[in-house]
Length: 525
Image (tube, rainbow, N blue to C red; front, side):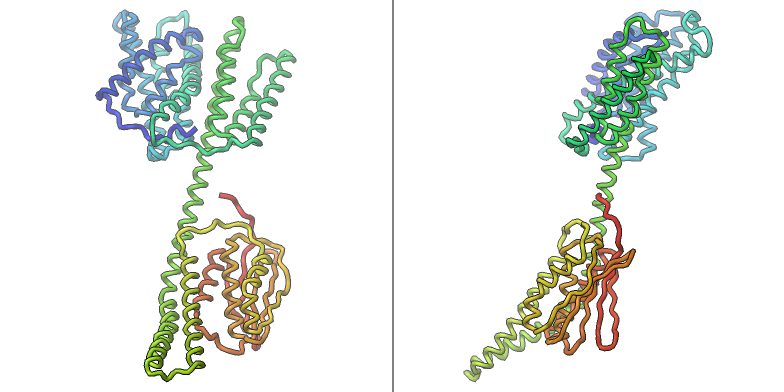
């Protein structure tokens, strides 16, 4: 229920739209305030629907409308003749009318100040908190009215007055939580900037939520059959569970169904104390469910933002590495380019002089082709490595990485008469990008093969309780012919980006490059 994500338009109180909004609120107040008398207890009602309209308008269009709404309510009450009292009573009654809307405005401002969220990034959790805080602030503002009222037949002592405030709070909370969400949703439909909450209504979760409701109903039915009365406590847990799993809309649906039963389904002979208790439970169900749903939505959004931030940081690290590699790349690329220029000049001069033989022409062409292909492969590798977007990390088996890498370089090994051997196995998985890890191992193998023509190159796999590794071992017999020395730099960067470490060790004539990676569980973002 991503109602609060739609940024409200800039609406001024004295603008034409603001005046229409205030007039609309006054009409709705007149209708819904009269309707609330059906659930009247003492001087307040156990359901006060205009509170939902008040909250929705103030949340959507700003707390600055609190004082015009308070004035509109006072004018409606004056039109009904309820201010025709002695001056002191009229003053007290007037305060009882204007203070609650001002309390709503203050409550919304307090929550927004505490949450410190930009309007376009406010989460459902912020709105859920405000739905509980605003009625509480309004109820505290009504304390003076409750204690100054002189109708002793209705409020005989302090306990009764506090009970009246509790009635006020219950009625407002139910009014806000039942009417504000759908009203805000309807208002958000008018905004082109409105965005939807994370989609979690998968079939298994829907069945899970339905099972929670059925179980709560069965427990309540057993309690009722045992003559324990109407028990709504099981629906508290069910609604919270549904809010956490399916979000605030699903939680609101269950809470609204429960509240509608309490509001319209109770027998007329239900004692007042039982009515108050059931309405209080309905309000608690709504608050708990909506807070759970808002928390769930906020958790999902924050996890997505963290994942996105991690990807941006990873990309920044890649770009930083590329900058660090630039000097080495320029050095490595200048040598083959110089060779190409010299050979091309020689070929041109010899062709013009008519002194080049077939063998010399063939050798020069092969050299130019080999150098050009090496440069092209270098550019492609760097382009892939420096790409703006990358594949997300997954669970990777090093044995599969080694198998794919050996397959890739098999033809090159045959051309160099190198025997490729794979020893050991690693059943453990690490977190990384399979294609990049494969590229790292391919680079190490190419370096080893070019330095060991006609010899053997070993790929060794293994693991310890905390780490998994692959290693490339060879006995150098020559220097790499092509001189493209960035392969090792790229391999090291890929290994370190996966949380690993690449080290070289020399044991006698053998050279070993070993990449160690931590073994850890993969967490989905």
